[in-house]
Image (tube, rainbow, N blue to C red; front, top):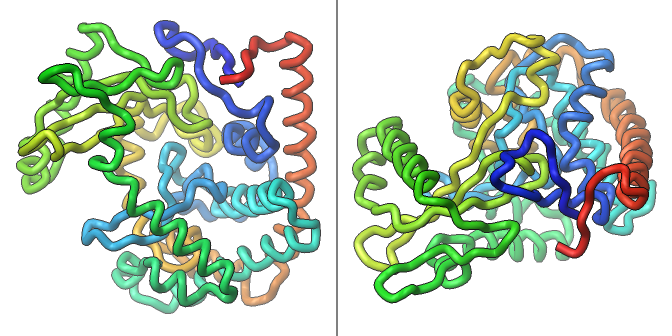
Length: 366
């Protein structure tokens, strides 16, 4: 589905919003703001570490560590902000139930998956609670550890498949797919409405922004990245929750035509959880700075990733003191996840009907 959003950049026309003709899980992914408003009305402990703010299952995946080891972790920080730890766990639990239904799991299987997720969070949090603060910062879950933890052959097969796919997502592999040669020049291929060209003024402003970005890097990386030359830049619609925001992809060339990197430039707005923590007064003047500040507080994780992020940024003792060692929290979150999955399906159905009735502008078949 493609919908015009009133707060989108008018020069960018329609933007992709894959919820109305998709599935309820697609709606959940794009509704972080709606869910934040719902969660803020629920009882909470008042313990507020840095949270992901959009902790659905699709926002976790493999990435390369600075040592080029493949690790599993949260990979989206657009909504990162101090907030109630329960908000992350509730959104994660609900997404497990919704995605389980979408993949054909029955209610018992969904409940079992949510309970296992919550139990793993609790167990890991207790383990981290007993570790020195510095040790918590270096805990991570790499591909081998994840493979060893898998209890079934089919799961180990899926882990191998996902890690292999992640290793193939490199700039040199993407070069033939997303670019084309134009004589002596290489350009990013247009794929309207997802990838579109910029005018000369926009390209110049983005080039200036990249120059300023270079000055924010550590000296070593400033020298490395500074060795690359900007070749092309284009507007690129990304994600679901980021629809309507400015996002660009830049192609840079190094020592040879095959030595390339793609950089993503993305507009950052205020976190969806921020109004329910600080009201109308932003804690950060620059929202890009917020994302950069909170990313290292949440990433580089071993074990159940939400537990590690929460334990690093706030006293784990407060959270473990509340949840204890029983399964009461697991049971409560299972009830919440099932109810929220039902509500997500109703909301998604209402959106589909509104689009079909013409109450919102929608275009299908993109």
